[in-house]
Image (cartoon, rainbow, N blue to C red; front, top):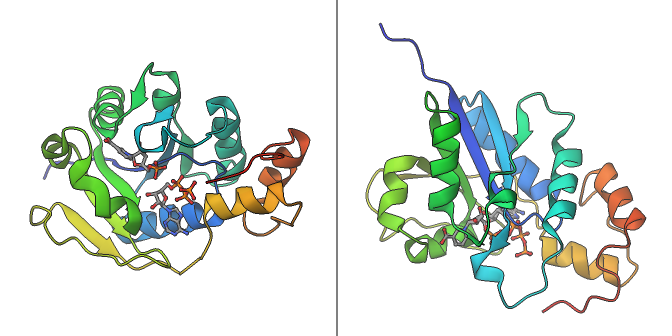
Length: 201
Ligand SMILES: Nc1ncnc2c1ncn2[C@@H]1O[C@H](COP(=O)(O)OP(=O)(O)OP(=O)(O)O)[C@@H](O)[C@H]1O
Ligand SMILES: O=C(O)c1ccc[n+]([C@@H]2O[C@H](COP(=O)([O-])O)[C@@H](O)[C@H]2O)c1
């Protein structure tokens, strides 16, 4: 019998900032698919967010490291942050495959991202590179209609009605963000004065 290939979850996101909705999605996907590791991949320049202000990649990367540090199965990759140009998942998966040729990849996305997935760059290629896990998200209908059969599995996760947009708005208005994001991320936002004076979309 051939040995089981390592199973690597990939949680891509802008993470501006990372919040408990992201962490629960990754943790649930890890349990359901028996993942050995989940690598969080903060975007460099997100292609769908070109018309909004996005914090510098280095801040988003460091907040992701702080948020995931206590979980031995969570890691963070710089592949998207370090690649010049706009960030596309096809490139993320290519880089991760090159770094971890033995691993089976599971790309984790929320219901809102899945709605758009057919418009992503080289969408046809994506299915060959990873299995896709579509997690539920409050306020979004989780559907895989129109996607090729068998390439995406849906997963109901505990509903956390948290978005990075809401966290940014709260930080901007001086409202608390405790318990929406990990404690270290609350401190990081305050220390660097992130989102102050930023009028979000
Ligand atoms: N509360 C949540 N529950 C489940 N999945 C989520 C949740 N928040 C975000 N996600 C998923 O995590 C991934 C990365 O999300 P992203 O970094 O864009 O966060 P966001 O909260 O959607 O940000 P913004 O409000 O700035 O658009 C996406 O696939 C998204 O669907
Ligand atoms: O590849 C694409 O064309 C593409 C378009 C939009 C989003 N994505 C990826 O989807 C993930 C979530 O993106 P976002 O913008 O909702 O934070 C992140 O890993 C992005 O790189 C990818």
